Figure 1 (cartoon, rainbow, N blue to C red):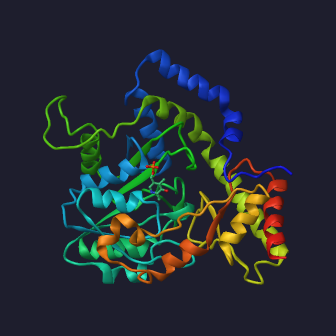
Figure 2 (figure 1 turned 60 degrees about the vertical axis):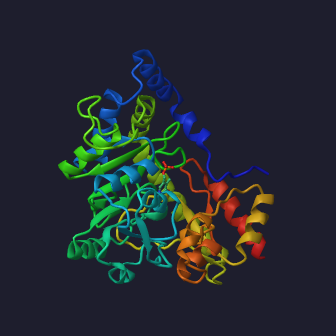
Length: 373
Ligand SMILES: *Cc1c(COP(=O)(O)O)cnc(C)c1O
């Protein structure tokens, strides 16, 4: 039996090996490793791809969030509204600046911020809203922007899983004041190490992010503000520039895989029996399927069964932010955000990467069907 891994980056590398090696070689020959022309070219290309005026290359998606919050001058004690069902970096960036994450629960179907819960979470201390476009589908942005405008709040999009995703024709990272992207290798556009990007249409914010990225120095060795080292490497930029022109093709392959899963699961009868809930596409734009996350009965036993069948799965994310040990001081007990907690216990990501073939998708669905048979 062949294995079906959750993600196979070697399969992608095999299709672009020569181009990637040439790009790395170009940087090695230039001996220009930090920022510079490769990073500037990538910034322009990613900004254009995301329908934004500015892109600022940074060291990771986590640092993109951190520097975006620094750029709006988040002060200790100020609040940022977000969801507890996300990767740690979202809440971590707020806390590192002394800010306070104020959580609202997710929509149980899309796993994104439930805008109906938003207005009630705004207080006089709220500075920003930080919606996450989870798994490749954008959050419901119209009501988010409406609440932000009504209260004079910034909106920072965590678009780490959503490069190229669209909401009513507008791209991730282009609707809020700032967009934050990750080039972690497993993201849809992944580097050969850590990397990230901040996007914006606001020239003042773009300038602020640029300044903060290099320790607030302007000119060199003269510091008007305290920033950090949030710089992007030239070698990452050069590799990402090779990959960016392929991104739409890879996204289409992910969408095809999602369609195939939907057809195979429908044929299996598992969906009708409600043993499995498939990902809900809210139908408001382009879903880029960073993950294909299903909801199942007896999840942990299914994971063990699939592991025996050599089918890779992963749980994103098993513990919501309000239940993390490092945030225990807030006293947010189990039951506070029931939709996030249920998702953490019932969801499971299946292989969706572009290079999967139909036989592999059949193997995954048949493996799951055997478990419930
Ligand atoms: C990956 C990810 C990040 C962090 O990106 P890194 O590049 O790994 O630092 C932040 N938020 C979300 C939702 C992510 O998926």
